[in-house]
Image (tube, rainbow, N blue to C red; front, side, top):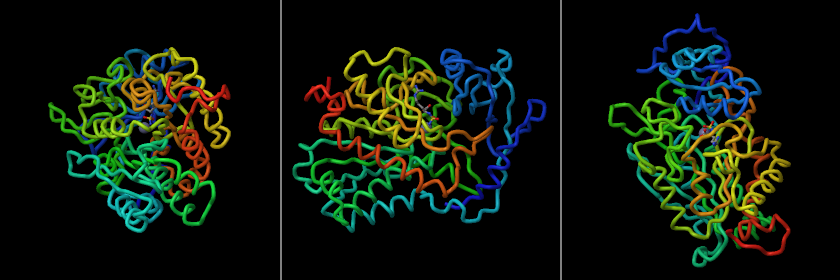
Length: 413
Ligand code: 0X9
Ligand code: ZN
């Protein structure tokens, strides 16, 4: 995909005060980047409850993206420091982001891997989206006949349309595993022989395509569901059916964090639900998002930690260990702000799967959306720092409770 990231970044990095906010020209509704006063997780959750998507968390403020109604509300609460809704004009696109895969390129890359390695890779469509895209899953193992009996891990990306780097990571994991297996890397041969590996690079193909349609990034987050009032999109990371709709999501269809009309109302989240239910051997899960350089674990819908002490300790121990490799900040998801209906709360809450969200690089983007479009140069280094955490989750999939060094405990609590 080709975009002029540099020009885009320079536009987005410009800081506009309230008085200089201009009308967005390219959308039906106005969306704004907002700098909002907030000093702790409680104040941040109040903001999340208004329906904006919080993207950057600092000690005394957050940067969030949301609509005009949310902006007015924040203004009236005296919390809005600044806002910008610069429209992204069509740009002249060089090849700076060409290394990112659009949907067609992603499917081709997955097909190539599957076709060239039928003994190791199976590619399956797990659903068709509203716009007719297949949601593709790769299953990697050297022994499909007995895969159901092997420990399994699942890796996902692309829940949020604009988080393109999160799609590259699972795809590259698949390519890495096959390349290293063929190169006789003993560690990877061991893992591919002994594990059942599930990789779904994009959970939101419609949104991913919409974000890069035409000539400028759309900064789109949700899927492309047709809501009953004619608006578009449900936040897939607010649509999972565990404590759905209990905070940090919105009933406003135009909100960035619209929860949908009911839990699992969406084809995409339902496909993940069905897939995970069909693979009961999955014990570890990693959902890639961007950005902020964080390792997050349940709960996200409430401030309390996981009640089962061992399960909590496994998440904490694994998050800390993974942070030694990628240098991300580990912590409970609600430490940022409350959000309900996300993948990891459901996977752990319903299936006791040890579950993590990674918010990839960059750590920060200033004021604007540059963090979603960090350029092609980051893809390989971000993969390199995250491969060890990915393999670690695979290695411990036989029993994640092994990390506690308390003898062989329960695989699930
Ligand atoms: O808000 C989200 O869905 C995730 N962040 S993102 O910027 N990629 O949209 C984080 C979800 C983490 N969960 C909670 N904070 N509860
Ligand atoms: Zn996200």
